[in-house]
Image (tube, rainbow, N blue to C red; front, side, top):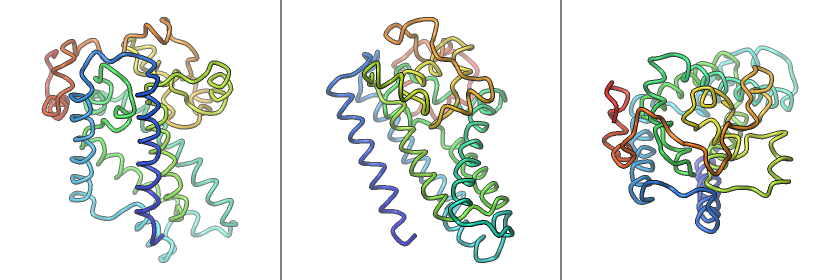
Length: 265
């Protein structure tokens, strides 16, 4: 765990660079907003969220997991289970947590006001996978800290899960289109770009589907899976109808104030 930062940042930047290069080489869709405008706002949110999270929640997820293990806190620290099984169960439970957290942020009005920052993006690319309001990020960390403590998730499982979660967020938001056969094969197991673009549709019935960030089975088990949108992937209307001025809602200050305004932009 002493090399946690290197593992996390190394995987993050590797996947980010690969996805952005693929988007540059062969984009699936054309953005209605200049890339420089969107990218400045989206990447700035990451920096602001990171600082806010560090100030408000000074303890990291893996650090808490190590402390819980040392103190015998949490379910898995009270059960005599082999470590490989604990890691698998921890990963599955954390992934299901993220599915339901995502679904609640759509269904609870107060939480949706925060999550609208993510869906107000008029285009979907790798940077969209990082576009979350700082308050949502802090709430998500607090939820994960609580669950990690209750379950007694080991630090290694937390590290692997966080790397996989961040990697898939970059992957399935990427503005690319996989070869048809490969896409149909991968969607049997994971959320592909086309499946996730359905989630970013302007139609509420499509926005409220395909909540998974990584594996596809939670959506299938909990009846929120949608294999195709009403429109084709090329013609899908992305974003939220209430945010009509796409250039304005792609600016950093607008993104920060979206949860606190009621009028259309």
